[in-house]
Image 1 (tube, rainbow, N blue to C red):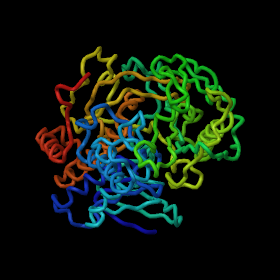
Image 2 (cartoon, helix red, strand yellow):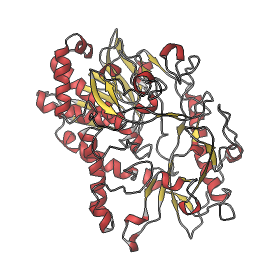
Image 3 (cartoon, rainbow, N blue to C red):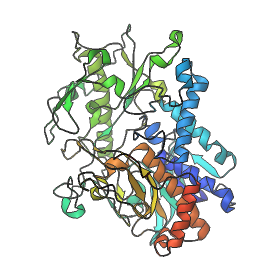
Image 4 (cartoon, rainbow, N blue to C red):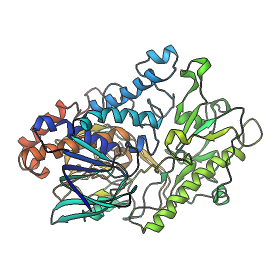
Length: 536
């Protein structure tokens, strides 16, 4: 069995894991850490980037992202995406000169772009640390076991999915950047999953009781193109009849079938009408095509305009019939396959049966683009995960810290140990326990260091959606720039603790360490508080 060792092992190559690798590697020359490679980053698929790439979802961001409210490295990434388009795509002059280019002109993000472009930008940012031998990236590695003793973790065992062989990686610090917090049960780290009770968290929108299996829907996304003159109907999916007739059983009720142009409005729970293309909609009806459009013909030179493409991450392919956390492998595999079947059934319904406002049914010109996601079937490599296991942390962020209603319009809690900032509404999709949307206001917030430190274990840290939040506050801490910020902070925290030969909890016994660490974060381009003049 192959064995190796690094100073820092990052398990999971999503946004948090990649950001942790970048930030930790930046301190290798500063701290004169010399064994090589110092940092090992593993990923289960063959693409780094998680939400942005293998899950194919353009970034969900706050309204001020172009000016403030993210880390300097995240801004470098955003600029790299735009520059990639300028360098390699036949854009019109106006798009080329626009410093805030939105390649797909999608409505949900100021940077709707293709997954492969995000991957290229991330690979560029990781090139130097890999070349300098500070960082080694190992793809196709699935964690299967953790070796530890007492309050410390020593090593992680992996299966190489290409060869089938096992390998062990030892490290001083181990970062769990997996999408579901996979290392937490393996390492016997105390954690929570599902929704907590109102009694335990004091949150106005919490459940009446603890429901560990009540997690948000996940979605198997796919890019969908439109050929106005073609016909590209796929084979009828195996589970099509099931999903065509599926009636959601949610509280408050969903207005009819899932595969329909009608849904529950996330904020009001009242029926909301949708349509596919903007020329079919009036001002009261939302176009799903514009929602996450990633290729827009308007930004291309007229004779080189490609077919437009939208990323399908819609209410109609949210899957909430089963929770994949802490389930036997065969049960989780069944739920994952049902999610894939739902997404394929949505496409088939759109191609063949979806009512067209101008008459007729079906849009046969819709088709999959497997080349954009690096798969054979056209679906993303991995499902878009919204909710993970969450550590029992030194501090758990609750709705009372950030929610507009819970705080009675007072700004979000100011954390003395802030390691970053974020902003998004508390956005919960329907759940496996039958809850409909919860979509409520949240103030621009901070990320407290205490939410990144487990109550007991000393050297395992979270870097994804597995930090100390609740089911409710996960809804605003799970988005792309926040996960990136969390990962950067944890990468720097691990390297700093190695240099100082200390554990993270010592920050709260000697506040000078905390002040010094926060100074390091600022030097690295991380914003720890919001500008005083920020809008509510």
